[in-house]
Length: 565
Image (cartoon, rainbow, N blue to C red; front, side, top):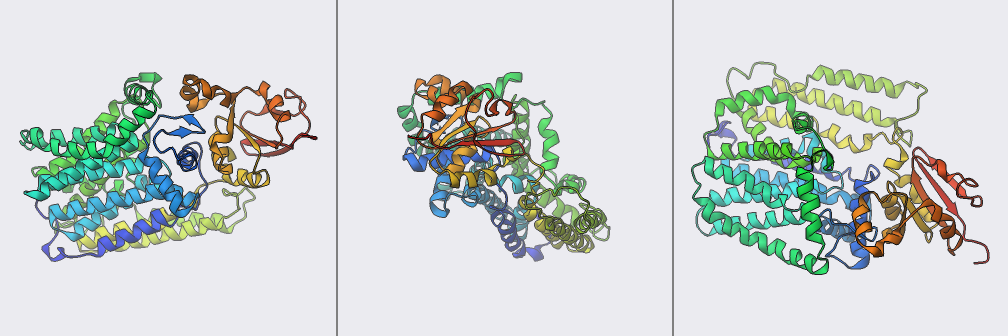
């Protein structure tokens, strides 16, 4: 592959070192800074918690109800983190942070082996780590980051095996298949589909279609070794799993049209992608010119094109869409940005010009506005529950840092230094993102941990009832997910409750509440989100006075144990 930067930087290792620091500061350090958000983070907390409490590592359960939306490996990652670091927010989000770090590492290795350049390898990892989509999803407890990392490992290992000869090729291909099998165990058949839909057209484009007959068989062995045991085990434990998982979670989501989960227009991801690429999206004019200068004649360039465009088109055809789905295409985008900018900046005519990613003066204006908001008492509620407006001062300092480093980058005449500085500039701001979550303006029902935890300590043995919006959070706050009864609608547990008769008692109507409250020896905690008008004591429930805890978007009623019981 043609080298976009001068040979004098072939052993330059600073970018890799800075990428490690960026991963630590952006992804690892702030993992516990913000509260859990429901329902997603609470869901992915209680499922592995139930595995630890029950010892059932085969069939996923949510609040003690069969929940077949995903396979088990993502839950295993979190359970292992709980065992190592305790049942807390840091441990819950750690697998996602490690996953993005793994994606950056694999990208670094592949770019290093392909180009022979340490500087490009480290820079590509730094670019990936400083895009906003990986930064947010890598500090959130959902399964997209682990899935994207394993897809990256699969495609990266296949490329390394394809470009290697002899015995090492078999090892790389086995690793590619094993990673695809692990991706399957995180999110399902997409773990196989994404690498296949990228690699098969790529081989055909390169004129190597005959290798489609030989190479995939080696990878298939690795995939079968990893995915096969659990696939058979879950079928043996519950024969309904694969029927639901295939038809509802895959076929219906892709082809369900307006009835699919999360339906969106075909152009949805075209709108989401530029946002996820911030701040590097501002360099796209230069990226396009640099990529056009290099061309797409090499197998590596063709692989990057297939890796970005084919999954993007595939997900755009799906009926159901979420912004997180396209995370697997960010590693190749980072590689394209790095190599194209390196080519563009290395042109003699570009060095003297003042070309910017995000105009520094805009960042200084933002910093000044934040400082004014921090210094002046406007008489309005703080965006944060703890009235921590000091965060505005930190954000202002981070924007000043960003602007100063950006000015230094734009004045640099060395292309590799310019790329490095542009990667360093947003690190401080990205590290603050979790702390800037405006909890004071959010409904407590969206992040109820700080509200529920003191009540859980006061009534540790209470009977627990929550509505479909808060049941997961109640199970996590009390660390007793299987003791939660759901009041009202079943929500996402509808299939598990309707399919299995033994789960019907886990869903109650509000008319059943008086009997439940008066027959238990312990206190009862009832947590619901909007609307809660029917909870008025002495009204529809016709119950004695209770202790009422209420805040934005959530109400908790607690009854003491009935006298004489």
